[in-house]
Length: 169
Image 1 (cartoon, helix red, strand yellow):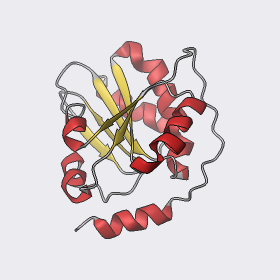
Image 2 (cartoon, one colour):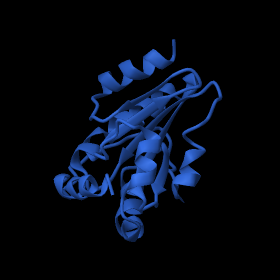
Image 3 (tube, one colour):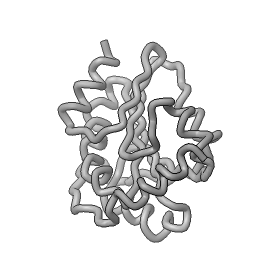
């Protein structure tokens, strides 16, 4: 139960007031929602190809998460031809997938892969992602076959791009 109190604090600390965010893309089709438990998500966290992955943990009810989403979308658009893939892992509650998460994906025209993590056993999967993770969001994991770094923070586009460039050297 190490993370349970923290998750409770997390749930109350992010306001359920997403700010208006405009996300644009040349593509017209939005991402489809894929739902996995941690075992299903794990395959996306262990790829040893030449690709660099940027995995952002977020939720629609977390204002700082929503605020930084355009930066991940911009990175996805600008770096997809450089072997970088952005994966947005939603921690929204399953009962909100249809009424909140799917409409959000559609309204914001998200282009990155969107995965809903439906696994209530936080105490098991949080430390598997990073021992340093307190459970707070937004949080981001950037990795490739040579390097892995976890960030429990919000990003500006410039800061995110700076971190990703370190993986492309």
